[in-house]
Length: 289
Image (cartoon, rainbow, N blue to C red; front, side, top):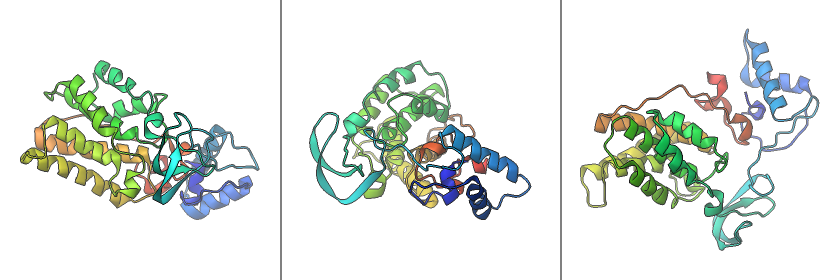
């Protein structure tokens, strides 16, 4: 269990507490029963993993790629300069220390997933996307997930018997997904992971703006994914949204195409890296396993 979830994912502060305080908050918020000792062991293991020591628990997560500080979001665009490539552009997102990283730099290295996908024989898109999440280009949050979700689905769909030109489909997915900026979930009301499932459906059905059934299926795919994410609520988590969107796409793709992809149980391993983890509300959080 993530120590940040002692506050149910709602506090973004760095504070110090004693072990007694940790146990108290665990009891108050989670009401552990006979397995209280195992719950506490999970907390302490997470604290140790995150280099948090007895008597001084730092609720510190890495967000900014430059200084690891928290991100801040504005309601309107502001002119910013990328700390890596120095390109200037309008954006709503930077860290609290003023650092901005553009989408292109944030997803640098993502082309490597095409090689991974072309070598992959799994029919399970969850398994595939988790391999992508372990690659160095992938961060806790970021627009790379808008590409990864669709690519994992295309690969599993092809391996499950779907008749597509996989190399061409993957390149198209990278092209389309890279156009969805970070923060679209909050600013557009359309999470990029969910939109990625719509892109997946659009590609496998050869949809265009003039298509009939394929146009409908692509938009229904996105809407089904968005509905699932909206029911859970925020704050955003790119891992949670990716997993839920993929599970939704597995179901709808089989309904429309008859192609059955595999799926597996998901227990999130990223809770300790997410400053805004929603804890018990997340269907993939270890506490719900």
